Structure formats: C-alpha cells, structure tokens
Amino acid sequence: MKVVLTIAGSDSSGGAGIQADLKTFEAFGVFGTSALTVLTAQNTQGVRDVLPVSAEFLKAQLEAIQDDFEISAIKIGMLYSNEIIDVVREFIKDLKTPVVFDPVFISKAGSKLLNDDAIENMKSILPYATVATPNLFEAKGMFDYEAGRDNKVITSPCAVVVKNHIVQTSIHKKSLDILMISGKKFNFISPYVNTENTHGTGCSFSSAIAANLALGKSLQESVEISKKFIHNAIVNAPHIGHGKGPIAHKIGAGLCQ
Ligand code: PXL
Image 1 (cartoon, rainbow, N blue to C red):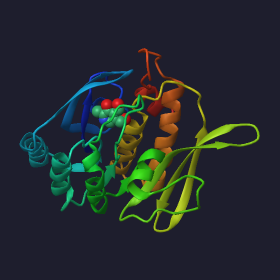
Image 2 (spheres, rainbow, N blue to C red):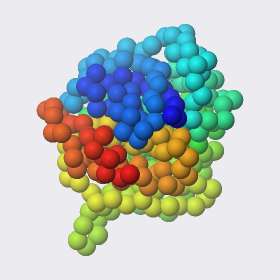
Image 3 (cartoon, rainbow, N blue to C red):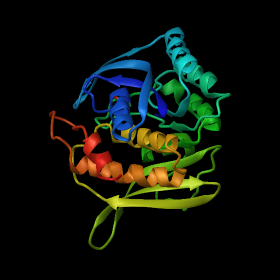
Image 4 (cartoon, protein in one colour):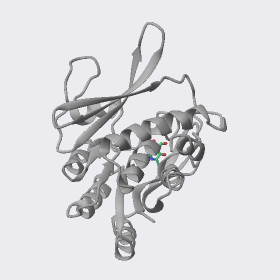
C-alpha cells in the first residue's frame, strides 16, 4: 500500500486540515500519515483559537515518519508561521517525493490561518514543490495573479493550479480550475454548485492530488480526478453544522473511481 504524508493543521470540526486529508487518503486507497503544524479550535462557523506546535516537535514527527516509511507523496497545508515554514522547507528540500503545496491563507469561514509576516516566506516552498494549489485570493498574494485581468500564465518554479474561477455562460455557472505548467494552461471545469458546504474543499482537493500522484497518475490526471472528487463530495455533503459545512469524502471519491 502506498504511504502518503500530510503536513498540516488539525481542524477540530473534522472537515478541513489533517482530518480532511486523512479522510481523502483513505477514500482513495492510500495510507495516510500526518505531521501536525498547529491545532485549531474551530467549527463550521470559524476558528476560535490556534495553538502552533513547536519547531522541535514538528521535526520529531517528520523524522519519525521518514525513519519508518517510504513516502510516495507529500501534501503541505496550513503552515501558519515563519518558524513552521522553515522546518517544512528544510524537510522537503532534498527529497525526490512529489509535493503538493496548498498555500493556506484563510479558511472558507474567513478566519486567518497565516501570519501576515509569513506570506513572503511561503514562496520559499515553491522550488521544492511539484504543484501549488492556491485559490484566487492566495494566487493574488503569492503570484500577483488576477482572474480576468490578463491572460497571464503564472511563472513559478513548480506547476500551479489556480482554483475556483467562476465562469458564467449564457445558461450555466461553472467552476474552473486552471493548471499552469511551463507556460501552458490546462482548464478543468465542473458545474458550479450554489452551496454553503465548502469547508475543507481546498484541503481535500490538494490531498486528492497527492493521493493520485502516489498511485502513479500524471499531474493532469490527478487534477482532473480531484476536481471531480470535490464536485461529487460537495453534491453529497452531509449538511451538518451551522456554518460552512463539510463535504462527503468517501462518497465523493467512490463516485470518481
Ligand atoms: O481550508 C484551509 C484550512 C487548512 N487547515 C486547517 C483548516 C483550514 C480551514 O478551516 O482549519 C487546519
């Protein structure tokens, strides 16, 4: 069985962060391991508190996993502080493993998940990543990308998927993700779903890409499967919580295999 690693934060409400990553890995049939960067006290309505793990303890988790398993892919999620970014960069620097980097800035409920003084340092992860998966807000902060402003293809040391462009055709709204790699663009489209159940979609999307890369799929195939997975998981969301509700990982993955 392929082993994958998520380096991310804990979401006590179970819909995003490490919990979403592990549910996604399980749903795609890979074995998930995890190194926690922060603990969050949150629910579907927002983040109430954040407790960062020390740099030493994060290192200890990473080394414990590395010493025991052959890791087939790594997903990086919430990093929060400069100290944590530095530990993660040092860990992935010399690895040959595919790395999916989700540059998390804020949660779907609008809570801040990255210190302001750490935005610049996030860019130092890019040379060691296979692909980064920013939403439009994060793409503006990381790459000065603005949808529709120009037909700009992001130049980055790694591939970039910019998520969640909303496209309005004469009849339908669609959700468009654009993969940019070596100056080329590839579009991935799903029907737009008007829903509050989007908590953890970014985390789950990036972990699905990592799972599929671990299974030997190409980057384009992995993005295509992951886009379908998120759509299916949103459509089948369990409708729990009073805010931005979680998605249905297992059903979502089952429907796109
Ligand atoms: O979806 C971004 C995200 C990442 N990591 C953690 C989160 C969230 C959103 O809530 O809680 C731990």
